[in-house]
Length: 216
Ligand code: IMP
Image 1 (cartoon, rainbow, N blue to C red):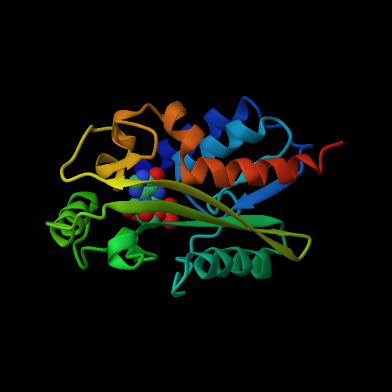
Image 2 (spheres, helix red, strand yellow):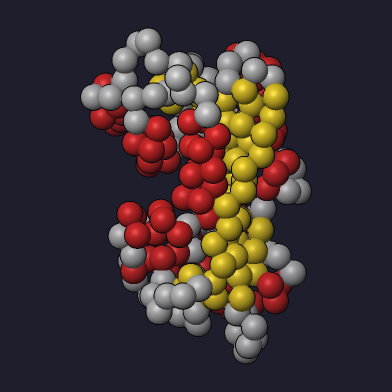
């Protein structure tokens, strides 16, 4: 309970610096604090980004689609239908060429019950043992619903899967993903460096450019 209220306070105080009540609002269908700060920083004081918690939604929105596009859409449509407010949602997957695009939409829970980032990495490295083709890409899909119309944005980061872990920053599959043009993994980059070339950074940039067209 204490942890929850501390988190809420932290969220509010971080965001109060740049939010004013007159700003147009856009719901981001997530409670991931890291993602919320990233995007609020990107839109500055033009748009007030609200989390699911901010709008009093504590439901676990189902992600039952076999595609990233489908899951992003499911989440944004769910929120729009419930709250009739402009909103967006994202979904990301790691698509490995030699595995026909797996783990893809199942990236978060790839290792099955009891999965975590370490187990997911171990499973992927085991599957790729002895396989020469290490090409992979991260893909992020964002579904935005503005005034009832849906628009999809996509960001892709191409790279290769290394044969062991490098670095301890970031999260998920970062320690085994070497982006094209680099000799280091995502987990060896600081966030600013990663965001410029990352799937999510690119998709967010496209969303930002679109939202800017609504500025006065
Ligand atoms: P989500 O849709 O952003 O929740 O991402 C689904 C899963 O993809 C995460 O649980 C991670 O395993 C993986 N993933 C997403 N983005 C990244 C990233 O930037 N680096 C490493 N793994 C990621």
